[in-house]
Image 1 (cartoon, one colour):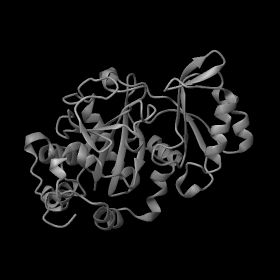
Image 2: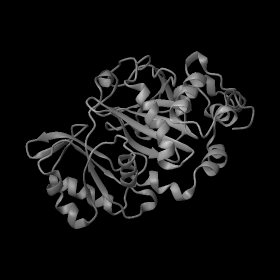
Image 3: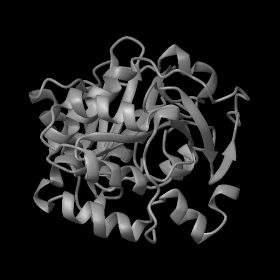
Image 4: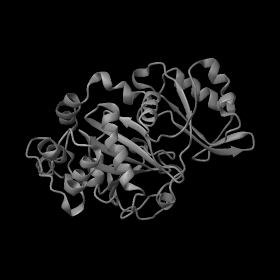
Length: 327
C-alpha cells in the first residue's frame, strides 16, 4: 500500500509498531493482576453483568470431560448457539451453530455436525487446545448474536463485530470486522475477515483491508463496504469507554456486536489488541495515543471522554498530531 511505503512515511503517519505498543502503552498501563479480567471470558461476562453492561446470554458451562459427553443437557433442544473456549484467543475454537438439519446441527458455514462432533470439540476445548498457553480450559455455550440487518449485504454467514481501541478510557480508533467465506463466518482478521475503518465521530465506515490488502467491496457479496452507518454508534462508544472502569486496563481492545433485537453487546475484551486497525483506518494509532496523553483527563467521566474523542478524532475534525518518533 502506498501509504505504508517506507519507514519514514510510517513515522510521519504516527503508526504504532508492536514493540512500541508493548513497551510504551501495554506495559505501563495494563497491570498484570488485571489480565484475568479480559483473558477469561467467563470472568469478563460476570464483571459486565455486575456492572449492568449488556452481554450475550450464557446458557451453560462445561468444565469436565464427563460434562462434554452430556452436552445434550445444556443444549436442551436448542438449535441456535455458540460454543467457545473461555480462555481462547484469535477466534480459535469458536463454533457457531445456526440451526438443525435433520438430526445434525448446522454451522454458520453450512457444515453439518452431530452431537458427537460437538462433544469432541468441547473435549478439545477442555484439553487446552485453543487456550492461552495450552492450559486446561472451560467451554461456554451462549446466545448466538443475530446480526443487524444493515450488515446483511456486507457479511458472509456470520456476525460482524466492532473493535474499538480504548486508551485510558478514550475510544481512539475503531473498525468493523466482516466475516467472509475464508474466515468460516468468523469476524477475525487472522482467519480471513475484512477490517473496515470507522469514523469515531459519526460511526460511518471508511476504508477496507483484507489479507493486508486494500478492498472496496466484500469479496463474497461484492457489495461496497464504505459509507455504511454502524447502528447505535453512541451506545457502542459508551460500552467501549465503560470497559476502562470495568477492567482497570489503560490500553484495551473492546469487541462489540450489534444484535438485531438486543442492540450493542460486549462480546470480548483484549489486553493485547492487534495493530491492523491502523491499516483499516489509514490512520496512525500512536499519534492519537499521544493526543490523549497530552490533552486527556483520566478522571473525566465516560461521557466527557467520548465527547473528547469525537471532537478530536472524528472525520475532518481530527487534530491528532503525527509522531516524529520511530514506530
